[in-house]
Length: 212
Ligand SMILES: C[S@@+](CC[C@H](N)C(=O)[O-])C[C@H]1O[C@@H](n2cnc3c(N)ncnc32)[C@H](O)[C@@H]1O
Image (tube, rainbow, N blue to C red; front, side, top):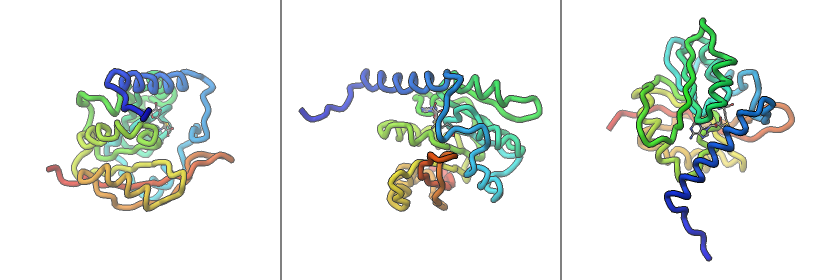
């Protein structure tokens, strides 16, 4: 029998399961993964060193996990916000990184939620490994939501897996989803992770185009 698309209640269950899986992962004190480090990821440091980010501006880290990226950006003087749909991740991010001298906050929010957001809009968005764990059928709502979370001409850095190392194919697949709300300005290769285990990734730099 051919595969049937999930009915709406099954879809809801799958979405809940995915969230529970992340919740379980982040509630484990010893949570480890090749992409997870207590240092700022090298690719984010590279963009900081190139002055791609602007200290003093606002930035939203989508699917922030334990908060290293948002913390790193707050540490260069950005007004940083991290969101993740895992309560445990957000608790750990707050416990680890919310310090009085930093402009940094974290909220438990699903980037694919149907109702709007009462945060933002932001000057910058960064997504390191969130869109690439969200199933295809939720990408449209992800895109719709991020269009409301960024200012016109704001910059969006998307760090996405590229396991087959097909730079052009992966970039145009992702750019198609974000067009016409975002314009792809630049793409380059990088590697997720540290140590022996690494995953090829693409860093895609988008600009939010004029509002319709
Ligand atoms: C591969 S991890 C990356 C975490 C973090 N960005 C980092 O670089 O360490 C993906 C993260 O996306 C979060 N996530 C997945 N789906 C999400 C959604 N719909 N809304 C918000 N966060 C989500 C997960 O809880 C997880 O923390």
